[in-house]
Length: 219
Image (spheres, rainbow, N blue to C red):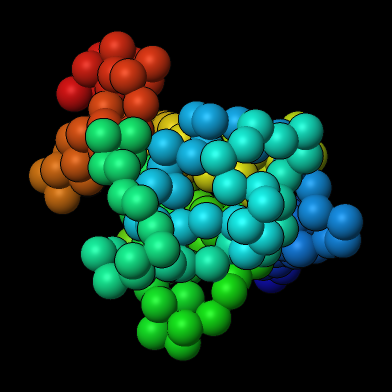
């Protein structure tokens, strides 16, 4: 009976810590004033892929000393006031995490807040972690690894990237997925997990060219 109680207590404590890291991250991302690394022309290359611009037109095509909170989706090819330059669009798997916010903005024809992209990114990590728990029986060592990863991701220095248009967050996300899957594969081989390892390695490869050598190692 005592062992059962201790086991349940450890489980509750473990999930409580994970939830704490998630809540802490969300509060940081939505706080005011906006917290994030400064925008520059690299960030503009990602937004061009969806024709997204700052809501304040005076800030378009400028390098900024601080991140901009509000943006709007201008629409593809149907806005005569916008000169499209798709040569400056940087196609990346990072756009997967930006797409839900842009889609929401398009459907409702509304401006959107940059933290909405940060929320999509952080939720992607924790949803993956919780789903992974339901599908796999994890060892104590694996849970410790996940807690360490969650602690590092919820660190403010890392979260500052989540409220930007940069590709670093997607690199962090895919690497987190890969490390968790790899730790499980070391315990028991699974064809499905092996497929997901390959799949997320491909996504990491197409995040940005600086991450491609690491992605090749996983592949």
